Image (cartoon, rainbow, N blue to C red):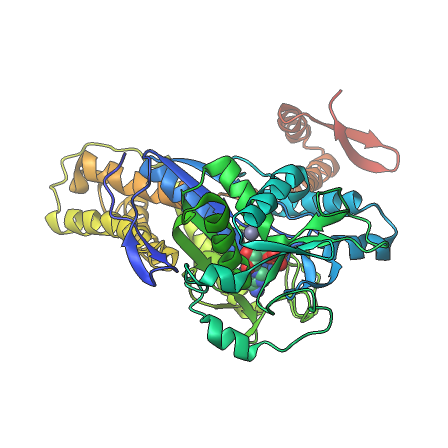
Length: 496
Ligand code: AMP
Ligand code: ZN
């Protein structure tokens, strides 16, 4: 395990706390995954990216992370007040598809986007529909513990009962009395003893297509109970880190705490982490607001507000330039700047990987050495400081100056000495690639480059420079390409 001083901002204590896993070197991490009823938008990606970087940094520090990120494929209703249609069932109805076709389609999309952006896969990706049995068991336990009640085939969590012994609202800072004042009595809520109660099981109306038998009749689980069951099943009753976007703090995570305490008799999580929102003109990017951008639109430059296409790594770099707890505003200009920054960093990566230590008669340069040591330590310190990727990137750019000086010959490696030289190149490469997950994107340039070679080939033929013609043919053959002199002109094909 590396020496570190990782501090994480814990939403629960509202302070940065030194990270101490329950059972090192193992770390249990649960992140609420997407509700797969539509394509993920860039806002969603931002949240998942923060946890990808957390996971990568924990690996770098030497921890073994069990990273559980679920797929929500049932129970997430249109309204947080347990009203409206199930989002997936609604989409299935509108598109005249099976709900599981909707789930598969958008799970595939989610995976494609995250692969393109170089995300690490989670260790376990459980789905809510795969854990109906566990959810029914938890609901039964809540009822027998007196913390949930059945009403007309649905089961609700009894918030006031829970609040008699436990502080409901401690994560989001809400107070039950205030919440009650704010909550209007909504239609269809009559079954609840108290408007703050939330569904852990819902009766399915006859037209509701996603349904399972239960002791309370045919129905489906409430949204919050899935995460309680899946996190308990795979990480235990008490685990290290739970994350999601800050819009999930209330009610989703608050309800998760109450359910876990109600079922398992203990607080589930040591560190609650919440990411801030990706905004557009200062407003949260969200599908319902109609201001969301899809990753595919960015990668193809297919949006009226975009002047170019932006590659997956440019988008990743753009997001990493902000700390995960700050808002980040999306704009074409910011992406243009990010593209420049990413390319500078990746050019540095190519150089840093090539550089070799060469002893020489050059004298040691104490100042340059100290500067490099200080900066390499600062990169780790920035990540230790609640994963401050923005500051870490700024330090990587400072390190890049020394890398470029070595590359152009103005700083001989011997001036740093072998140890510091290695620390410089290794820190730069490891943090850029492994921790931040920024990799080189090779342009898909085959057509373009072969096209240029064929132009030279045609020119050489016209000039009867047959040596050159043979040379170009031979060169292209080494990469598996044959030149074909057709009646209609010069063409190329794969060598068979
Ligand atoms: P959902 O599929 O709506 O449950 O969202 C999946 C994840 O994306 C959740 O953790 C949300 O908090 C997060 N999220 C949604 N909108 C944004 C946004 N504009 N910026 C950052 N994260 C978001
Ligand atoms: Zn969740």
